[in-house]
Image (cartoon, rainbow, N blue to C red; front, side, top):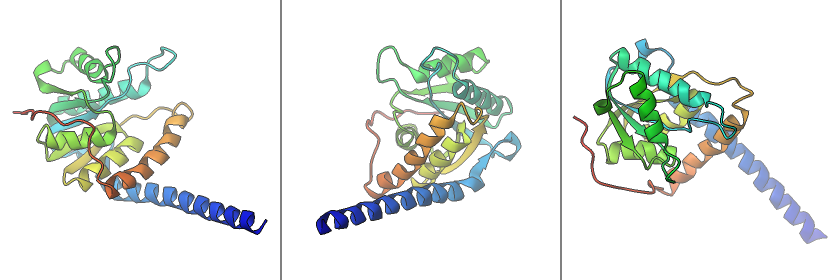
Length: 213
């Protein structure tokens, strides 16, 4: 019985420590990235290249994904206000029938952005991969990252931890109920950022350098 009580105490201590670490990690990342996140193009410095973080075009039920279309709107706004010249579209292309970068490229072109201004990164399986590959593969040391605010907090933090001058342009979010699951998952994702930094986790794939004019 004594051993059982000790095990229970250890478990509870680890549980509390884990919860505290999650809270601290989220607070730390939000605090450190907040000065570089903006909703208005007027506050975004002119930057050669933007990194548009991928997401699925449609939800599992086939309905349009508001996260996707709001990010497209934000990227188009940046380009048409001449804040950026090029866009790296980085996302998941892990199967033949699922291609986030091409879906986003087509959506951008439909909105008037020339194809030669769009570069595709098919190996953006995680935010870490997308951010680090923008530097290592596409040679960018300064970026505007486009996603929703909760995602930009993590992306901009990762970029700056990897020696990049980065800013976040926040796309319009979805309503808090539609995005509840996504926001809950983000708490754990922000915690994993520190795990990746501590253990030096790198992108899953490398590749040949891509020159952006």
